[in-house]
Image (cartoon, rainbow over all chains, first blue to last red; front, side, top):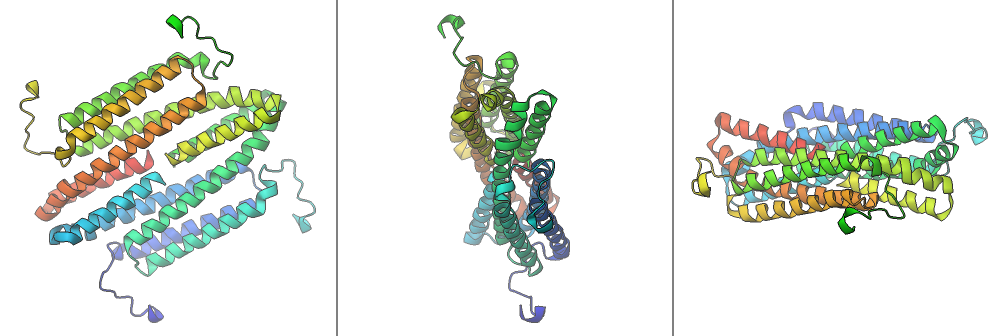
Length: 104
Length: 104
Length: 104
Length: 104
């Protein structure tokens, strides 16, 4: 990560092409969370704060589902083609990640 | 909000006393979201990004449940005691907020 | 519960009036779950089974949110008016129930 | 599906081997839902009904996550290896199914 020049790693993540899009969405969510922190400091009405929290949660879920899609379409498919223990491992990872998303 | 002297408004929110605690938690979540945005920009491994998103979602839910508790213990209870249309309205608001939390 | 004659208890639940509606909805959900069990036995396509599971989960959530509304509009409001430790207890119960719904 | 003799289809679902396990779990959930319907009819305390609904929702999610795992380990991996439009289609299906689970 030296000077942002050598970001190349052995494994390029599946969302590489749409990286900017996802980063932008996360920045927007960051701004929304900052807005909620400010609402709390200004003692805004509780229900309005909760409405914003639900909106942020939905936005986070949408990013997560998008990243998961990219991951499956690239990493998981590649591993499935290669087969062997790596395929098993990728499936176990995705399974755990989906479980965390469903339960969170 | 001048010098913290005139914080009295017509309606003080139910979380007023623990305002600082909630604001601090939201600031921490803001930092976590910023960290995720950075992970995406640095093309970190997708599954690691998803793990962080699930953690943030859980943290947001915990704040939301806390705020909801305070709201019920103060605003809803007060309205219930006062009775009349305002009690109805508060209940409808809480119901909608819970519905949004459950579905998000 | 002898012959369904003596259902009267000291505490009538808040959903008492709409009991039949909720019972009917639960019976319908029971039928949907039975249908899913049958789909599994007949080795129906996995994605179709998952679609039905999501539909049942949504239906259960809708019943839960409805029951919660009734509970708040009756038991919680009554307890809030009465005040004292029972009000505290009812709020703690509702809070825990909402937490379980949000996390499940 | 005549007499349960000809259940063989061109596509055996991924959960075929553990079919009995999943069917048994769904039957147990069916029993739990029937129990909740009875609780409602007997006007049991609302919070107790909600606790049972949350338990059933969790049990359903666990079945769904299990079926999803099997589906990915078999159908999705097979399609990924075969490649082409079917692989795309399987990924789109899984993505939609995960989205429904996360949002329900």
